[in-house]
Amino acid sequence: MASFTEALQLALESVRFSQQELAKGSLVKFSIEGCASVMREVHFLCYRHTQKNSPKIVAFHEWLIEECKADGD
Image (cartoon, rainbow, N blue to C red; front, side, top):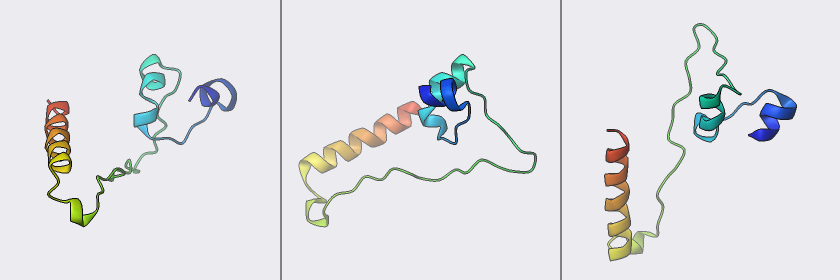
């Protein structure tokens, strides 16, 4: 993101990757009246179907769900 804020002065990026710059004010969100932000899932937990019941997969999945719930608090 530093190259955007220092050289290009423009970024089309996920807020996830620009949180620090937005918080510092070195980047600001450009909005257009009548246009909504695009919100969609961009990360997926993938594993082989034969490993669905693997203790490691199950434990990681349960941990991930709990972390996501905690992040929403």
